[in-house]
Length: 90
Image (cartoon, rainbow, N blue to C red; front, side, top):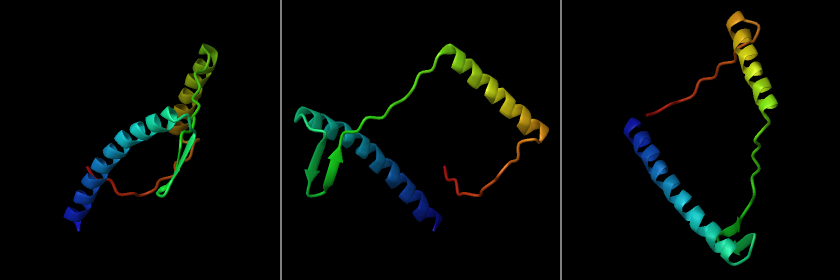
């Protein structure tokens, strides 16, 4: 059971790496065709946009202050911890 799990985890890593490679190629293909979606017999492949934000120095400082306050609450016991059990394998 443990050996099978370890092997499956390794297989997943290999497949995820290949998926990343193929994603780049498919996105290049879609954009090269001037499309946002490519409907195939396997399913629809879509080029989507994900936004990320870069905040002002003021907001970054406020965020840092918030992190400090969170740590203070954790250490003082004001913040309550919720624990969950999961399987980790390396």
